[in-house]
Image (cartoon, rainbow, N blue to C red; front, side, top):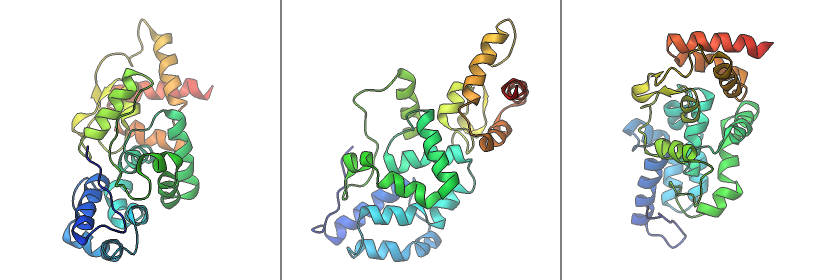
Amino acid sequence: MQETIVSRRSSLEERQAALYQIYTQVLERQPYASERRQLAKPEKDFLKDKIGVKRFLKALGTSEVYLNEFYYSSSNLKFLELCFKHFMGRAPKNHAEMSEYSNILMRDGVKELITRMIDSEEYRKHFGCFTVPHPYPEKMYDSPKAYLENDLLINELHGRRGTVVPTMLWHELGLQCDGGTCATQSESLSFGDHEDHDRVELLQVLRRIHPEDLEEVAAALPPQQRETLSRALLHLKR
């Protein structure tokens, strides 16, 4: 993907093109007229070179336009996944990273979460101060599964796989969430002849999920998996 760079020497036309690319990356579309009015101040400052890419991203990420689109209607886990996609250009690497940023979100709020991402060393390394965030390929992934999850997230349309269960989790739970409704891909979650093995695997997944997110995840599952989840939670509490 060709990088979009904005510097002090950029013309108004170049800044307008960069603004279009920022909206495409972060909002996954261009703002509606009413939303444009809400973003008028930071947009004007950006076009007049009063603020740069990073400051505009922070203003956009904490605006009601972004929050209405991705935060208020999503679970914390799905919102986190989308923030990684929009501001870091990739999917979350693992559960430890999700847990770290989930704690920031719950303890300090959205503004701190997005600030941490944009001010991170990784962001500086890939985008610096002048480049619009964009998807970038890693030289090496931890596993084929990590590559697949990153590719799915980067290329999916917003809402296509719902607003509750993040890609990492529906993949591990053996679900197919295309169309926004999760359905079973296999019988891997149904306790049967391999009951102990299946329960151990499911418990390992559940231990990585923050308790406040479990209710939202459970509500998004089909009835069979919801029952399986309930039984597994009983064992988790023991």
